[in-house]
Image 1 (cartoon, rainbow, N blue to C red):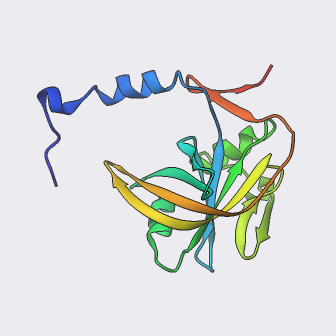
Image 2: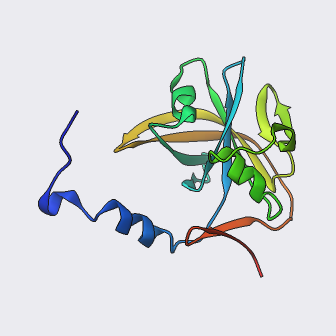
Length: 165
């Protein structure tokens, strides 16, 4: 185990970093994947589009997350990104470690990959590159399939959920 840096190389404290970045409003996504036996989901706000040509997105996953272990497996070649609607706070909570009844999750599959029904957008991504980054791993995904609706998104800002308007 490495010793955390001190002094100017330490950067700002984690609490200050989290509070500052909480001022950046973001959509809420659920990352989904399956090992063929079990399907998993994880709430993630650390999601970004990277490139239009080729179509690339990036999601950041904490090393401690069960999703990290799943996405690290070679046999797991794809992951889904589900952008939640304003009506899906319960799903964000469910997949962020505050699980509610599993029957409230509306799963469906696209070519064997589990996705979340009712989301305003879904992306099916092939793992393109895996980048170690501190206590997280960045998964770069090549988008092979997408669908979307014009419903309102769920927004996360200063540690709370919001709706547009």
